[in-house]
Every structure is written in C-alpha cells, then in structure tokens.
Image (cartoon, rainbow, N blue to C red; front, side, top):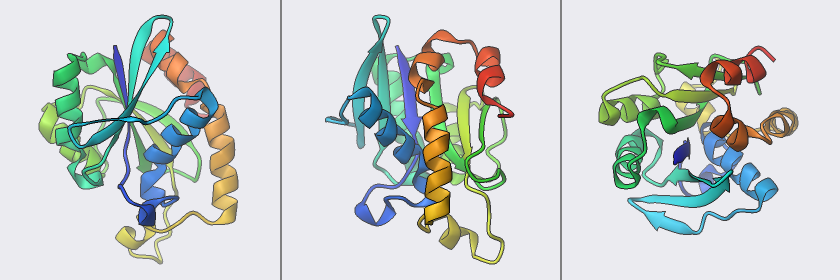
Length: 186
C-alpha cells in the first residue's frame, strides 16, 4: 500500500492558489484517472486507486497547510504504510514555475507544511515531489503563495500536470533513482 499526499489549504478561497498545487495536481489526476475524493478520515479527504492490485491512497489533508503533519501521521499509522511508500506533493518557491523535482531526505526549505510533517514523522527520509511556483520578491511571501495563478502560470501548470499523467503508476513501479531520472531536470 502506498500513500500520496497533496498539500494545500481547504476552502474555495484557496482554489488555484500557488500553495495549493498539491491539491490541484491530485484533482487533475482524479479527473484523468476517474477516481473521486469521496472518503473522509482523520481530518482528511481521500480516494483509493489500484495499480497492479496494490492499493494507493491519495490524500488531501483538510487541516490547513501548516498543520498537515498530524493528518499524514494518522493515515500512515491507521493504514500501516511504510515510510518508504509515501509521497508528499508540495509547492516550491525556489524553483521556476512548473519545474518538477523528486527529492528524498531533503531540507524543508522553510516550507511550513513539510516542517509539520517532519515534526510528526520524526524523519526527513521520505519522497517528496516539489513543483515550482517561482517567487515574486516584490510581494510578501505569504501573500504570494496564497495568491492565485495567472493565465500564463495556468498554461505552464497544465503542461506540467500533463507530464505527470503517470505519476501514480510510476511511483508504484519505479524506484527513487528511476523516478528522478524520468522527471528531474526536464
């Protein structure tokens, strides 16, 4: 069993905001793969998907970004998921818009959602998919990450999400080195 977590904030006011790129990618994959986020547990909404008879749980924590750790921790414990079988999808200010990068055992880079997950898991040794949202230094960081994508950003993200059409299947079948080879530096 594997767990894929998209980070974001609940509520309509956060739809299409930069910080919600994890939620947005999971919603995109749900539309492509035809699954629904129709289950609730531990302050999270989730879907189940199968790849070669392996159950995949796709989770959107509803506790707000900075408090994601407890939800992720409860899912891992309840479903008895090995830490090596989780993937966290996050936004990254320090990468250009739409760039994707798989990392393992990496610094939070100041990302509060990742810091909270590390606090609960007591480790950084898990896989993360970082998606670049760039950074406009003329705008306060909080306002920027909670701001909406503009049209050109949405076009870039659509192309990025298309590249990630097989993310679920690849996370199930490829080891970390192969994931990095396939997706990083593209």
